Image: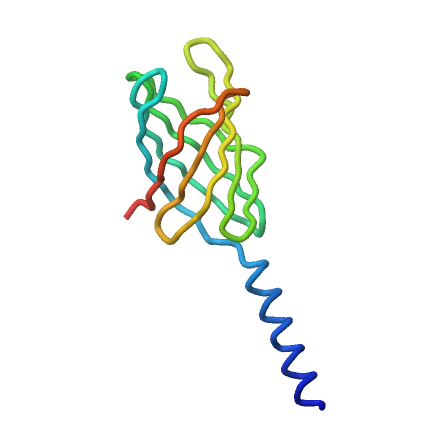
Length: 126
């Protein structure tokens, strides 16, 4: 009886540890994709502390380069979300990202303001 309770407790503890594990995506991730305004290149510099995600988005859009701090960043297991507040051609844009980490890739989708944006893959820089 005691062995069963001990085994059940060990399984429950392992389940909690696995469920609360946050993917470590610290470092640089590269992405490029086509959008309504043309080709875009990004380097995401992520920093992770617990469930908090911070860093920068370094973008190149139509020959214009920008570095923007990431805000509202969260990481929950393999799911991430963050916001880039980009000033582009005199317009302030709130770009919201959601993604799923899978090894050295992150499948990201983004919304520009209230409009659906692009879905693309960011790859860990080597």
